[in-house]
Image (tube, rainbow, N blue to C red; front, side):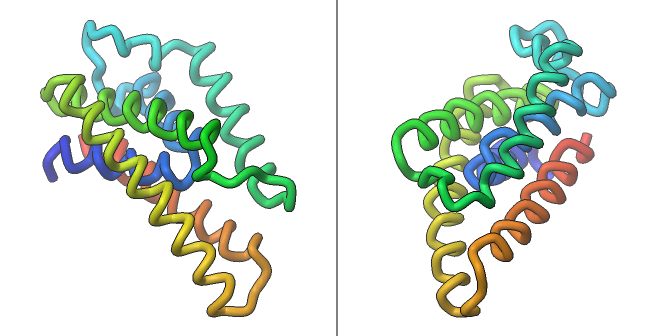
Amino acid sequence: MGSLFLALLIGVFVGLRSLTPPAFVSWAAVLYWIDLGRSRLVFMAAKPTVAILTALAVLELYADKLPSAPNRTAMPGLFARVVLGSLCGACIAVAGAHSALSGAVAGFLGSLIGCFGGFQARTRLVKALHCPDYIVAIVEDIVTIGGSLYVVTRF
């Protein structure tokens, strides 16, 4: 599977959960599942980066289930998603011997798809299934975790 498609895909997962895919990308770099070489992205393989992203991802997985969780399509969350989607896309592209810029663009587009598509899917599923929002959110967590793990293990 092409690394630019994987960069798009990791962006989609960032659109669903902004911090979980970056944590997986960082862990993959630390564990040498992906090689960031001597690029400027090598900071993703630093232990402090892994620790911070992992802690933030766990907090996000919890906070997303709270009724007070902000809308993912609102400006602060959307901005974080496109920046982190671009970062993750760049890392995946570099690991696949493509340019960081092409990966960043793919990750950016993927994060928009995941953000707005995920919002629509979650909203519609809650209404169609007549279930609490947190049930669909847990399924979204599983998709994001499984998908992120899939992407970072393709190298």
